[in-house]
Amino acid sequence: MCNVICVANLQEKTGRTSTAVNFAASLALLEKKVLLVDCDANGQASFCLGILSHAYDFGLDDLLSGIVGGRAVVRQTAMDFLDIIPPGHSLNEMEKKLAQNPDKEKVLSIVLSTFKERYDYIIFDTPGQKNLMTISALVSCDSLMIPALLGPRTLDGLYSLLGFASDVRKKIDEPLKIAGILFMDCNSLQDVDNYYQKNEHKDFKHAICSVTIPGKPLDPEVDGATAPSCLVDIKSDYSEAFLDLSFEFLYRETRNERGK
Image 1: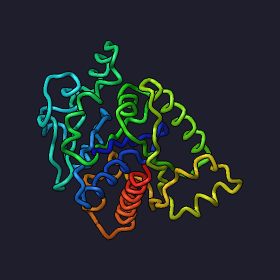
Image 2: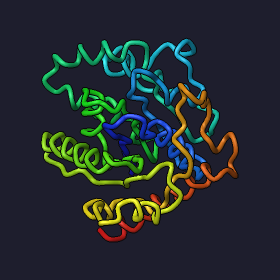
Image 3: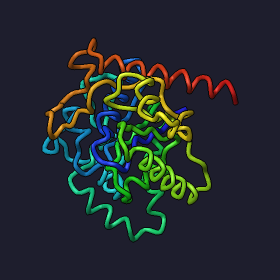
């Protein structure tokens, strides 16, 4: 069964794209069939995987419009088990057109339903705004992964995101599962506990991943990152942390399945 994961955070510079790309690549290294859906018109996730806008004809905008379907929008990456759907060339304009559709939030889920037979995981990289693509990704997903940075506004941001996600999920009458809160630029969980010394993060402790990601999130616009970390240096601390995250995620998934 395909598991659909939305990577989201409404705060800027928290590592959404870096998390989506490197988490997807790590699962692919474990020979899980992964489809990364680039829901951000900026196309940074596509850029990180070497899929440049001038190199393809169709993207997510064309899929949502019904111009094309199926494999026409899927691009292969340098990894055997990882494919991507780039945003296309006019995703922002497509959002405006979709706004007239009474079922606009469900269109993404509908058009991606046929892909679930081909992949173990579908991962959304979202734009980090309360726009239609973020809402559509939250409606379509099975669980939410939240990259976060230690900071004075982080907890407020988590409350805001989860409140927003809860309101969105009420439209389909389904609660939202949390795949994990992933702390970036953080060496260990002890760093998290030390930062929130008064146990301010108690409401989220159960959802925090035991794996943390050392080093700041890579920003394609600033760092020029054009490949997942595991393809650049698989032995780096950054790459190993995302592999550990994948193992933790798969373990949790298996445990939850057994608990049903």
